Amino acid sequence: MEFAVVGQEQEVYEDPLDLMDEIEQLKIEKDAKILAHFYVDGDIQDIADYTGDSLKLARDAVSIESSTIVFSGVHFMGESAKILSPEKTVLMPDLQAGCSLAESCQAPDLKAMQDKLRAEGRQIQTVAYINTSAAVKSLCDWIVTSGNAREIVERIPADQEILFVPDQHLGRYLMEVTGREMILWPGSCMVHEIFSLQDMLRAKKNNPGSVIIAHPECPQNILEVSDFIGGTEKMRQYVASVEEPTKFLVATESAMIHPLEKIAPRHEYIPVPGIMESTGETCACNRCPHMARNTLQKVRDCLKHGKPEIVWQDYFNQAKEVLERSLLK
Ligand code: SF4
Image 1: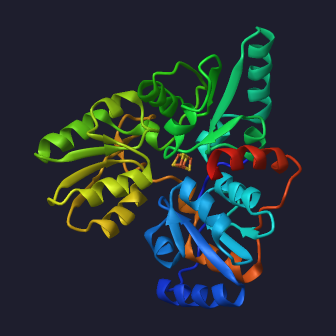
Image 2 (image 1 turned 90 degrees about the vertical axis):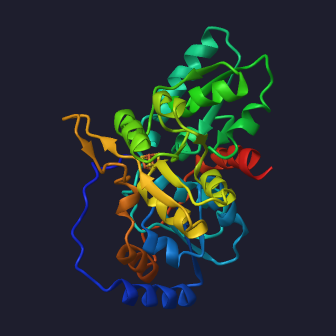
């Protein structure tokens, strides 16, 4: 699926508290539960029934009993929820909420790469980060998240080569922690790609005793100087385990600070700034424009109107096998 260049539509102002009341009522009327990724606005996380990273939310989608799910996140997450729970209606506040990482690996390009490697006589297994379209997932052997990637990579026989798509930075990090060589797809996330090493080191110097926590989607130069590397769930667990009030410099999407403050309010969280490629200036571009498409109004509207909906596609069948083998077993 193609996504338009992201631009935010103007919404007419509505009181967030009224919207939250309306959403609570609609959830009951429509037998719906709301799942929200840690990167959507804190207000949406607060009215969600389930919050988490991609792996947890994919599993939650299977276990909940309501007939309707509202997936507040980005498109590939809604697709994964539908694939794992075909009998449920999966609604999304905004179907245009894509993902630069998912878009960097298109199914025909992946198929061409696999065919080329196999024509060379190479035995490969393709491992895809969950940030991929269902069409790409249907071509893969395994799906990983930042939470389970290491465990899945360790399941692959040593005599098989690994083609890892689409995130080169996560792939490089996994090569380090697992000791496995991989062929890396040259994709990256537009948010994690732009953290400014210089500004991060300056912030560290200005905040003596601070601790840098970084998502493995960050480039190597950021990960090299980080004190803790982990996906969003691991970050939460880590800050919760630190008793002493601490300053954390957070190198991931800035909405992540909301769940960190909720689970461990004794700490201070400072977002690491991004840097604008065009001008080299520091900016607040550590906010994912795709995740930001989710608003309380759109959550209310999709519940009210029963759309937009993720509709089952034929290739979801193959993607289902791969997802179940990777995430549920
Ligand atoms: S933060 Fe990056 S990886 Fe996550 S949805 Fe946005 S573009 Fe995709």
